[in-house]
Amino acid sequence: MSSTTPEPQHGHNQNPHALQIADQSGAIPTSTAARAKRRIVALEEELENMKQDRGTKQRKTTYYVAQGRAIRRMVVLYTSLEDLIAENDRRYEELPESSTVTTACSAVTSHWRRSCRGCTSSLRNSTLMTAKTCEKRCALSMKVFYTMYLSVTSQLKKGADAARSDDTSTLKDLIAAWVNQDFRPSSLLQADDKQSRGFSHDICGRLLCPAEWDWDNDLVKVGIRDRTSEYIVSENSWPLFLYEGYTVNGNNLEQGLFKSKILVQAFKALFTSPSSAKEADGDGDGADIIENNRRARRQLNQTKVKTCVRFALSGVSSWRTVDGDFDYEAFWNNAVDFFEDCPGPAAQRRVTNLLEWWTRKIFGKNHREDLTQDVVSQMSVTALAKQRMALEDAAFDSD
Image 1 (cartoon, rainbow, N blue to C red):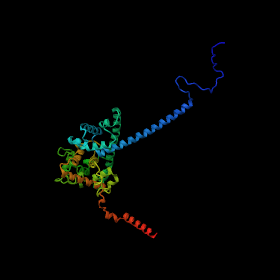
Image 2: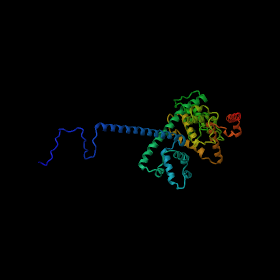
Image 3: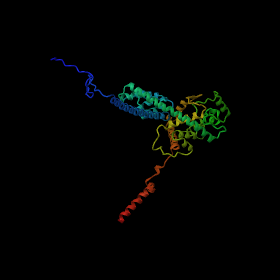
Image 4: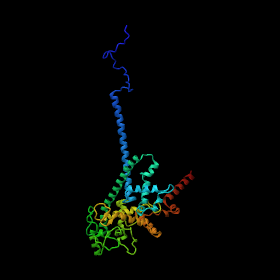
């Protein structure tokens, strides 16, 4: 008898349902249909995750763009976001461990002192961290952080640029309507035409005329229009549109400054609503925030409005930093210095009174301090409570 085992006969009497043995890789054989179904399920889950990630990214992008809109309105009008962050980092690195950021403000230049408060408040309230604080608070690599930094700052700048564009466009239309309504010029301003504004238009020229000159003087008017060396219009003069009643007291240039109707209208149009700008003569009808909410940085909001109004009255068709001899950035700095660099306590009190005047004009003043306990006890809510209690007592007695 032979000891050899006969080899299986291929192709004869094989069971198609017999269990297949795994190969040396350890993989269990599966059907093509099952593998395809599992792959489809995995792809569907991956697609759903991508949709969720995309939605989250879009919400984050929208958030940062919205945050960026406040930069040009609430913080600074010209300084770049990168410069603000770099300056904040520089000050932070120079501070002793026991110091705070604000203590570094005393030794900085006037240029950075103007934006110091806006810089610190902006970064404090923003989700964007500076490189110095990021090193201490998170374990991200610098490469990952830098990528995040570029993405966030890009969205913030997008929002900042969009806000300034929207505001200048809004005021371009509204200023024309306000000038036509209040001054009724012989040559009406057109909302879509900037070329006819500026010093070539009699009313716009009057409002833009420096406070120290008389626009009704033909020599002044011709000199400004011809841009002679005797009549240089620059940021070193306060324009007439800043003054209450558009008149100036040469012996007291602070009297009526920053109290003009057109400034109040512009502020309301940008920061409350365009329709609210129709009521600019009386006090506002909102809540009194003089005592309850000081509205941090509101003086810079007003400074931004002054710059935008000046641009809307000018004949310049697109935003630029310098218009002829007039430097808008220097004008902004002069206005900020008026509020923040007071020469003494007397000037500071006048600035405080001016800001409170603005608060009343925009938000109104309530009389809650007059609601004493005696006054409240005579009002209907308290009276009704007493009546209901009396009815309950009467019902109890009857039972």
